Image 1 (cartoon, one colour):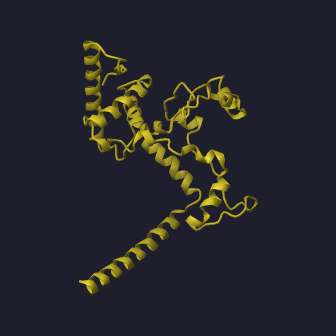
Image 2 (image 1 turned 120 degrees about the horizontal axis):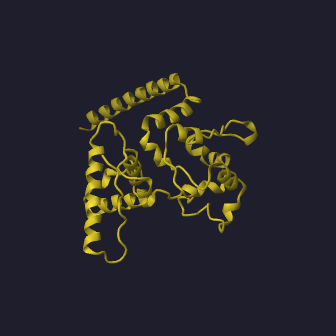
Image 3 (image 1 turned 120 degrees about the vertical axis):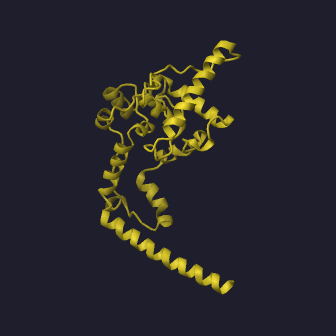
Length: 240
């Protein structure tokens, strides 16, 4: 499939020609999305942004089209041309509360959740809580040919690449820009490489959770499920 340039929705009242061109592009977009959805390789749901990356990965659109395609997909979900549940989540809530933890350390967050999860991280000096950052690093991005986006705008709209922004001059931001430039790779880009993405997470988890431990957990859960099933059956017999 040849790459095509997806047109942005014309501002104001579009001409008949520009409206027809846009509608034609949207219809093609819908066909490509439904085609990809029908393949057995896609065994997970993606966001509207994620669909853009899948289309970009198949050379149907270019990275310059990601924003326009994301908007078109959400419009098609609203007007019924695409199923509402074709996306993993409501895009309008994609970044809700994400930056809350910026105000606290991981240690403080763990302490606040201790009672709810039944595990006490102890004091920071105890070393019980291990903070192990993993994710998209430069080597992984380049090895898997993930898409760089030419800006540093955060989910809340904070443009870290703008010199007029006070956060632009933070030491960590300046260090990042010196190393990689005013560009970023979004987590959604991983949908193009699901196998590699899953392996990235698997390796991180297995550094701390053994397969034997997972098997013991599953066995214990199955025993409890069987107990519950017997209890429900007994209550049903006694009641009815």
